Amino acid sequence: MKKHFHYEYLQSRVGYYTALLSMGALMLIGLAAAYYMEHHGHVVTGMTNQIVWGMPHVFAVFLIVAASGILNVASIGTVFGRTAYKPLGRLSAVMAAAALAGGLVILVLDLGRPDRLIVAMTEYNFHSIFAWNIYLYNGFFAVVLLYLYTQMSQDFRVRRFYRTAGTLAFVWRLILTTGTGSIFGWLVARQAYDLAVFAPMFIALSFSFGLAIFILLMTALMRGDERPVGVGLVNRMGRLLGVFLAAAAYFTVVWWLTDLYAAEHRPVVQYLFFSGNVYSWLYWLGFIGVGTILPMLMVFSGSARTSMKPVIFASILTIIGGISLMYFVIIGGQSYPLVLFPGKEVKSSFLDGVVANYAPTMPEILLGIGGVAMGVAITLLAAKVLRILPVSLADAEVDPHLAGGKVEELKKAA
Image (cartoon, rainbow, N blue to C red; front, side):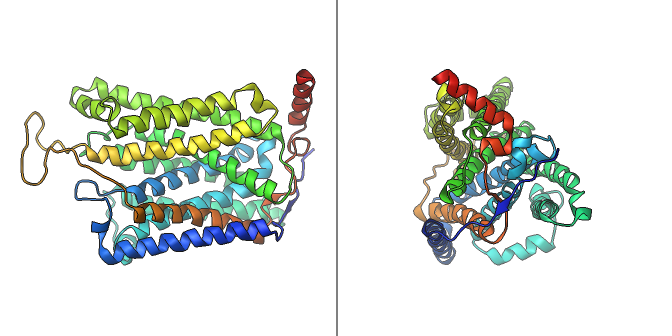
């Protein structure tokens, strides 16, 4: 028998308006930072001719990759038929579109000349992966809106295409993340990149980033509106997060092992992973330690079966580790000097062969935070005007098996 889930608007509470105003304030601060950088030029940032992608790109790529992973929550229920995830489909779709919008706004405002985006939208160079991604991003919005429409429509003739739209959304999000990873994988000029493994690595990263963000925002919305959330559901999502974390870490290890095998790439691997600089610390301590091992220990611990706190903390650490890895990949990969003439030592007045230094400035960080706030604000507004949030996510409501497992755990604990 098919189970029907009930959805309702967020109620008008003080906490809701406080959160919305806070996000609005952060967005205004981010907009002011963008204006400051546009008015004075990129000289007021830490970016240089050697490092042209800075902290705003770290935030932007993180959000774009996470958007794909957030939509995966809906795909688990629609494409793979997991009952417990089906009531999360609407929120997942809206949150995914919001995250992508926040990431793209950061990129547009960091162009220095945002009006030049019109040229990129009208003159396409199909030899560039960036031109491809314009179609992938716009297509993502269109597919997500179609998917959301088939979920929320009261017309049976529309709702019967729900699974088809969900499958299309699942395939598109894989293509989107492949395109984002290929931006780095196809950059042959940078020895830190130039590997096909970046495409599947970014897909694995999207699973963990997106699920961590979804867990945090979903539980915050539900508990802030005093709606029940089952420990069994959160525990199941936490264990899935642990699997995604392991997969993401595996691909990063494949990355540096592959580069170590190629003699021409060994110097950059030594520089990034094993030289003890800030990038090495970001990878081993930030991503592997704080962002992978600690969260995995938390989500697979016994306490995660009877409490949501370990999964919540694990999600926060996953996001910290994800931002650390994006900084490592984007900034660290650019800091290593271009190899203009392999096998030759290059010296010139243009800093050829010199490791580039970069220090993020406050305007860059504020712009990134503003993009994140925009994604959250869109989700908050959507939950207020659309029925996307379930009335209850109690274990007995979403999946009786979860409730039964919870009872058994409590009996064992007693």
